[in-house]
Length: 180
Image (cartoon, rainbow, N blue to C red; front, side, top):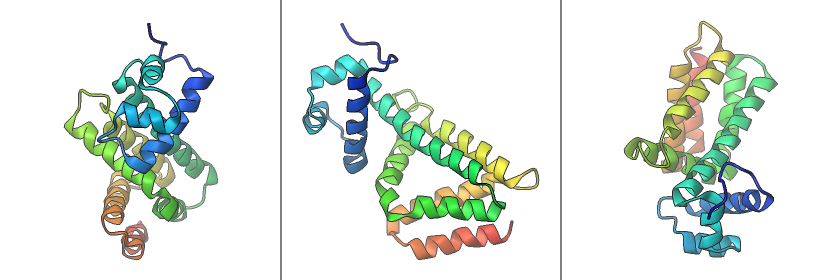
C-alpha cells in the first residue's frame, strides 16, 4: 500500500524539501533512491510510499522547481517598472551565483523533457516556455516580442552555465533590451 502522492503530508513535504536541496546539489540524472534516502534521513521504502514511485518523486521534484520559477515570475510581475528594467532585474536574479544549482536543475529538466517526452519529465520544457511567454508578454505589452526575449534569456543562461562568464552574457542580454 502506498500513500496518495497528491495528498500532502508534513513528512512528505519535509522529505520533498530535503530531496530538492539534494538534487540542487547533485542533479537528478543519476539519482538513485538509496543515496538520496540516506542523505535526507529516510529510506527508499518511505520515499516510494510517500511519492508512489521513483517517477512520482521526480515529478514532485520538478514540480517543486517549477514552484520556485513561478514565484520568481510572480515577483517580476508585481515589481512592475518598464520592460527593460523588469527584464534586467530578472536577469540579475537568474545570473546571481547562488542560482547556479537551480539553473543546472532547470537545464537538466528541460533537456530530459525533450529526450524523454513520455517519462516523468514530460511537459516540463513546454510548460516552462508557456509560463515565461505569458509573463514576458505581460511585461512587454502588445508591441513586444516575448519569444525574442525568452530566447535571449535562455541562450544567455545556457552560455552562463557553460562558461561562468556573467559579464559577457549580461552584455548580450542588455543589447537585446536596448533594441526594445
